[in-house]
Structure formats: structure tokens, C-alpha cells
Length: 274
Length: 312
Image 1 (cartoon, rainbow over the protein chains, first blue to last red):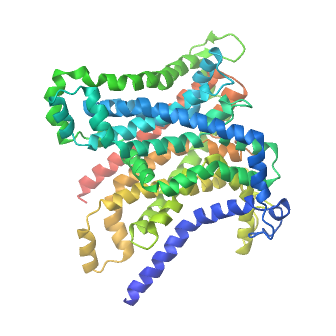
Image 2: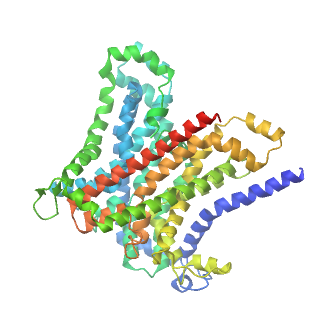
Image 3: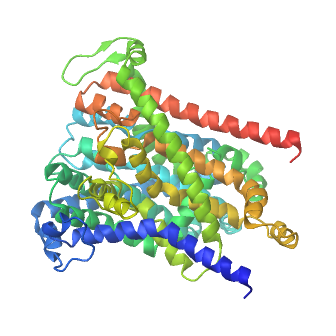
């Protein structure tokens, strides 16, 4: 190695360190907060590695009845909104791609630009009139605002890249459009569906704004529950941080293990107009 | 955004075009269920919002048609005007900082080094993590007495800050969180752009003995410009609408120092339950986002024309 290459290597690793450390340090600090007793969390200068590890913070959060309820709520809302979105969005993406109906993308675009609160005002009234407030149904429906555009958008992009030859051959052999979709297009599209599924799950799971308006005491999802813990007791940082970490842990694990799909989905969405 | 300009139909589609013209409705059944959903949850709410914005509409009292008076009320609502100002400052900072840092990060991640895939995964974690959970931890870090940020500042001799607890520093502090969270998205988009750049210009630059900065400034930057523009556009749309972080950390405070349009919209609609006025804010808010997007598109076109005119 020449001196110039050595300098380059050092520079590169220094840059990597500078770029990645805010993320690493943040999540380590979050972990540290969640594993400390109050006496350590209230200490100044801050304690980074506690002498006594407060596993109790996690046990307390997990043992509370409500937390389990909210976790199940989150599972139901995210699960239903994602599955419904796949059910209507995958065929729609296929149809739009095959009809080359690019103008329909404008609707997706409008959905992307519109602030979430704008949907809430009219839909909140609708749910009130229909007497649905107090159940999980309003949240499932409004989460479709997030999941359906993601699924359609990603599936349009995916079906545009899958080869047409097999489908045409099947059509000539007398298969119906539905059979072609079901037995030819769908199996090929599995990776695309995985991308759409993962992104829809993450953005639905993380959603906060719909819940604070529509959720009652019994129907909170986890992000709303965590938010209510903040205003409830500001001072016990340990359990709060533990709760925050539990809420976001599924998403962080998905990010690490499905990084390739996430990157593919986000950049496809982005480059094509997100 | 660029969906209409960029997604040109492939050759395969133009081949089937005549056949498609003969049997146009054949793919419609695939689209109909989604169409129903989109009409119910996206188009209907929009139409209804516009209708509500023309009415005096409060929860628990009767509604009356008032024409454009909700919109006129906006022009003399100091809290709304102030919120527009906060939104613009917040947005401009939250576009520029992630663009600069994200480009730098993309150039770094474009290099080959051991552990790159894993570190990239760690780097994008802030953007995927649950915003409310993140906000909670940032709130603890911003704490003036016990927060770790003031401790870190004290290590390098900078006096303690009030961060989100002072009107003058609250917006920059929130931008810090927003930048931390969304720089990864810019990085991913620009990284996609870098991957598409041919290697020839770099080889000749190396032969000519160009410095790293010159290579970046005169080769990389012009070639990734389209991607930077898209990243900037997406960042703008998201920053204008930013809600979770601001709401969870400051709720628009202290006072109304960090109250953006979205936060004000929330108060009007769901604290005061003034749905008619809230709808008017939602419509104007949407138009503002479209306007900002149009300005960016126009600026980009101007840039391209000047480039063509000056022959670079």
C-alpha cells in the first residue's frame, strides 16, 4: 500500500465511524436507560454501565395487563390492515401494470402527499355516525390509508418488470386472466409481495397519529400506549425506555433481517416518486 | 412525483398495445376491489373535507353553510400564520441537512469495506424505528439537568442548553431528531444513483490526478443530481407533514414555539373539535405542499435549462 492508500483507508474508516455512531450510540443509550434503576437514571454525570442491571423494568412492562392488551391490539390492527391491503393491492398492482394505466399513479401520489390528519377529520365523523368508535375497526380501516398505497405502488413496479412471455403463452393455451394471475404471475411475484408486506407492516406498526384520535382506553395500539405513558409519569425513565424498546424491537429486528427487501422497496418507491 | 415522467412503459407493453385495445376491460376486475377501497378511504375523505371546509362544523352542534369564510378566517389567524412560518423553517432545515449528510453517507457506503452490509443496516435503523419510541428517548436525552446531550456538550466545554425547552432552540433541536431519523433515506436514494454511474469518468480523472473533492464536485455531483432532487422532494413532503416527533416531544411548545401547521391542525380539529375550520386548514395545507413541490420542480427545470444553455 502506498501512503496515499493508507491515508485513504484511515479516512474511510473514520468517515464510517462518524456516520454510523449516532445510530449505534442512540440505541445503546436507549438500552442503557431501559436497564437502569431510577437512581442510576437520575445520576449526573450519567451512568453508562449500571452496577445493578434492572431487568425488573422489562418484567414490569410485560407483566402489566394493559401492555398485553395493547400488544394484541397492535397485532390485530397491523395484521388486518396489511392482509387486507395485500388482498386488494396485489391484484390491483397487477391490473394497473398490465393495462399500463400510469395515470392511476396520480391517486397514489395524492395519497402520499396528503397529511394523515386530513383523512382523520372526515373518517372520524363517519366512524362516529356508524357507531364504530370504541372498537378496533376504525383503526384497521384507516390504517389502509397507509398500507394500500404502499402495496399497490410496489406491486405495480414489480409486475412491470416480470416477463410477459409466460403469461401470453398461458393465455394462448386458453387460460383465463384470473388463472394466469393466480398460477403464473403470482408465484413469480413472491419477492415483490414480501417487500410490500414488510413495508406495510412497518409503517402500520409505527403509525401514531391515527391512534391518538381514534383509540379509546381499551383500543390503544402500542405507539399510543407508549405516548400516554410519557404524559402519565415523566419521571420513571427505566420502565419508559424499556417499553419504548419493546415497542420498536420487532421493527428493528425486521430492519436487520430483511434489510435487502426494505432497501429495495424504499428505493423503488423513492426513485419512482414515493 | 416523477412517476409520470420516469416510468416509461417497457417494450413488452407496447407490443401488446393493439391486443389491449381490442379487449380493454379484461384487467378491470383485478383493479375494482382496490378502487372501491381507494374511493372509500382516500377520495371520499377528500371530497368530504372540501365540503366540510365550506361549513361551520363543530362536534355537538348543528352545521351551517358559510361559504369561504373559514378560508378568510385563516388569513387573519395569527396562530396559523405563525405556524406557516415554523413549518417553513422546520422544512427547509429538515431538507438541507439530511441532503448534505445523506450524500456524504452515500459516498462512504459506496466504497467497499468489510461489514458494509451490516453497518448499512444499523445506519437505516433510525428511519424504520417507531417514531414515538424514538421521541421518548430523545426527550430524555434533551433533559436540561439529567440529559446525556448536555453531559456530552460539557465534555467539550460547551455550556448546557435548554434544547426543546426554550423557544429559540426548540426547532433546531427537533430538526436534529428529524435529521438523525431521515438522513438514511437520502443515503439510500443517492446510493442507488451512485450505483448507476459508469466508471469511465473516474478512471480518466484518476489519470489526470484529480483530488477527491474535485472528483466529487465535477463528476459525482452532476451525475447524482437527479437523485438528489428526488430525495429532496420526498424529504420536503415528509418534513412539511412531520407530526409524530414534534407532537411526542413538544406538542408544539414551549408556548407555540414549535407549532407547525400539522400540529395546529390537530389542535383545531381534535382539541377544539372545530372540524369545519380544521378542514379548511387541511385543504390549504395540502395546497401548500403541492405549491412547494411545484416550486422545486420549476427550480429543477430552470437549472436544467441553464445547464443546456451554458453547454455544461
